[in-house]
Length: 181
Image (cartoon, rainbow, N blue to C red; front, side, top):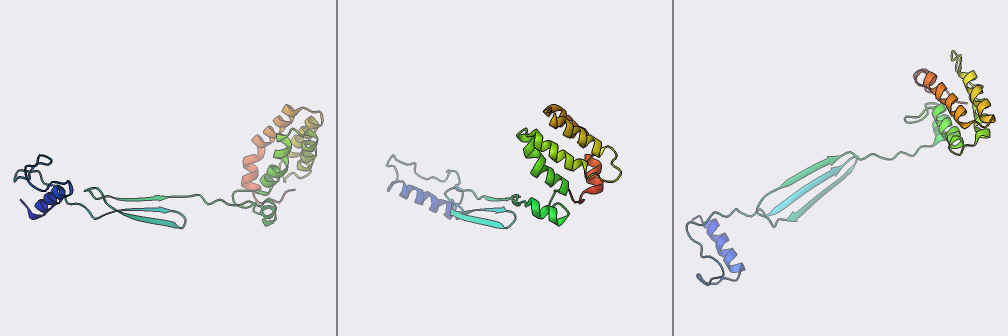
């Protein structure tokens, strides 16, 4: 038997309270006993979160196996959006456009509360600021304002949808940074 295995077996029998062979509490080690794995002194785990946080932990091992774990995760960093600063910058800010910022700040709340008189006023502003070569822009916005003044929420919403279907992708491609209004 190897000396390291014998030392482990003796240590185990002493820690279990067995002080002499044949006491009945623990089997007597023999030359045919299965080998016992050597304990590993520590277990280490490391985790890293982006963009700049790193954590490492080390703890004493209680098992006879060795393990190492490592993980990396992307953590989105919240970005505060200032609509006024984004519009003033002219590029609309990260992922935003001046018209989009204006719509989110003005039109979205008015539609959410079904404040059709305000929607009508806002659509008048949209009608007054058509980009060049967008021939139906003003007439679509005026139709929406007329529907809003008549109190027809669904017709107003339909005119907005029609304008978005016809012009949104083109406007983003051609006029992304265009100031509005």
